Image (cartoon, rainbow, N blue to C red; front, side):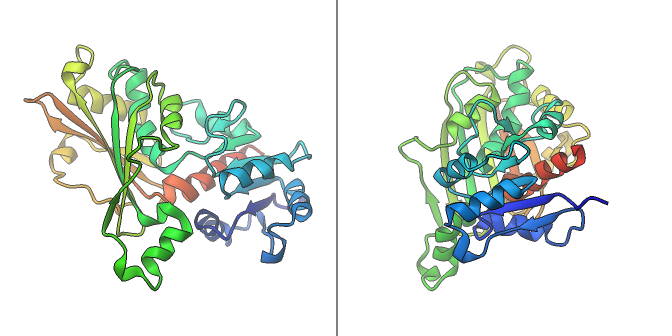
Amino acid sequence: MSNPPLIFIDGDQGTTGLLIHERLRDRKDLRILTLPAAERKDAQRRAEAINSADIALLCLPDAAAREAVALIENPRVRVIDASSAHRTSPGWVYGFPEMTPEQPQAIANAHRISNPGCYPTGAIALLRPLVQAGLVPADYPLSIHAVSGYSGGGRPQVEQYEGPEAASAAPFVLYGLGLQHKHPPEMQLHAGLTQRPIFLPAYGAFRQGIVLSIALQTRLLPAGASLESLRAALQRHYAGARHVKVLDAEQSAATAQLDPTRHNGSNDMTLGVFGNPAEGHILLCAVFDNLGKGASGAAVQNLDLLLAAA
């Protein structure tokens, strides 16, 4: 009987890496390889580890992720990169299984998979089905706003809110005011947009979770585009999806507020379409865990697609 697949987690000491390790540690269908602290920056030891693996999970800063990929000489090694280094790179499959009906198979067959960013996960989940359905023009002047838990800033920000100076941490921070955040190119490419969206992120004094919202005006949408037709298009696209649910009309009407923490600890995402038809205003919303569907949960979901195809 052959050994279970060997999974090398490079960067298991970071927020995403720790959660991936936690999700995998009790599984019997795989073996986990990590490096001790003294060897994490040893290029030769990292090269040995990554080339011995069946699948490498990269939980690293962008530059380090590119360096890790450059170390690979074994053509059988498959990679899931949780950084933003390869999310718009040719030859890399985008690791959002619910994005298209073909995406799970594309991921299962891939050797290089780029895990989506947390904010882009929500934006693309909402926009791509609507753009493909012709309900939102690809050149619509989009403005995307999202609020995340402070863990989205990684270990330094977690320390700021949970360390000795936690009492002085800001309750809410709006950032990216220069509108040059790294996520819009990823959103534009994978949502099928022809224009770069405006993206304004924020984080609050809660550990994890995201609420992302996109406001639309029906006067700028094609004829026939309405709150009901947009909701129906999302419901069709995600019908049968295990991890993505769309609120129906009754649920939407009963929803007065959205809690960013509602899916914490899971790989689930809820999408909603709200609005004021009398004014022609529509609001698209996504709620999910930035550390779950926005990071470690998505990575494990992609890993399972690779393992099932092995």
